[in-house]
Image 1 (tube, rainbow, N blue to C red):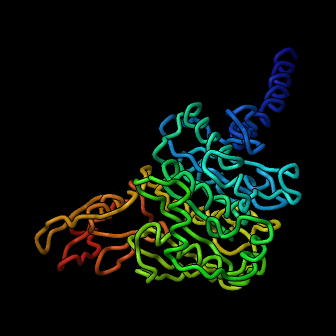
Image 2 (image 1 turned 180 degrees about the vertical axis):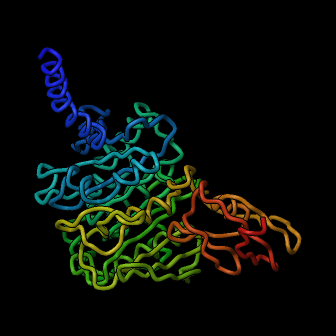
Image 3 (image 1 turned 30 degrees about the vertical axis):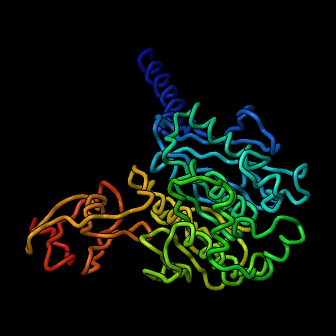
Amino acid sequence: MAAALLRRTVAALLLAILPWVVVSVQQPARAASLVQVGSFGTNPGNLTMYAYQPDGLGSGRPLVVLLHGCTQNATGYFTNSGWRKYADLWGFALVLAQTGSANNSSGCFNWFQSGDTTRGQGEAASIRNMVAHAVATYGSDPARIYVSGLSAGGAMAAVMLATYPDVFAGGSIGAGLAYRCATSLVQASSCQYGPTNRTPQQWGDLVRDAHPGYAGPYPRVAVWQGQSDYTVVPANGKQLRDQWTNVRGVSQTPTATRSLTGGTTLTVYGNDDVRLYEIAGMGHGLPVDPGSGPDQCGSTAAYFLDTICSAYHDAGFFGLNAGAPPTPTPTPTPTPTAPGTCVRASNYAHTTANRAHQSGGYTYANGSNDPMGLWNTYTIHGLRQTGTNHWVLADSEC
């Protein structure tokens, strides 16, 4: 009887413990979450700072600043934009700036007010101080700071790239507007709903005047524009293209064009200096693509539109998937090799040696355009040279 009682007691204890063990194994806790930062230095723009650091993130990692659109907030942008997925996957921190009705009745960043779009002033200065806080507190790499935003946040991203080119290595502008397209609310409406008559040189001068005397490299820029956007009309995407190609010193004539998912056309300018993503049939919002695929992200909500995962392509453009910053003004030098030479290396190494090139986060062999997969330091392929700057996949040979 005593033995039977003991067996029943042990069985009962196991039944009580087992569900907890199963849940603990199948659903591990993830400690990292979006947190509000109470103090980040002077705050002349009256903004709120939020930050996200993936579990186990060490120092020396990149940082991406995210800027929400009108009527949105930091939490919603963090939840729906898809950036958290790649921060966890590739190891970088996020800072989200938030404005509110005290600054603007619609909760928009004041991208059109001179007092908020001038270096050292207003909202621009507050966002800059958030970056400084992240570098000092989280150990973020000051050479790998990027900014991305939607609508008014996209226009504010352009402000940050123009006023602080010494801080940001690159940026992404979603349904945004060119820097200093407007300096008043009345002008803002004109910019949103119609094209502005300026030459690329005049657009570029507006950026150069934002930080007089600056002689360093300007950030690389990606522009996202829905072709059925009636809030920020498609002309704004081309004006941003004109502005940043001029600032980067490259032609407005494309160097490459590709068709991507979601009705997206990617046009590349210079040596991947500027990208223009034009999405057929998309209205006003940030492109997302819910799903579990490596190039899928985000969730649909107001102004988060199911077309293509912009965060995935931007992270690749910034070089975050390779663990190293993109070169500000890439000038790859061909590696001298004899015809027939076979080289086995990572996709990242192949591109830096000018045996391959990357577009949209994917790698292609020079000359043959053989697809090689994701642009990173982990994917390894063999390439064989068959002519001047002409390489083919040769995994079975080298």
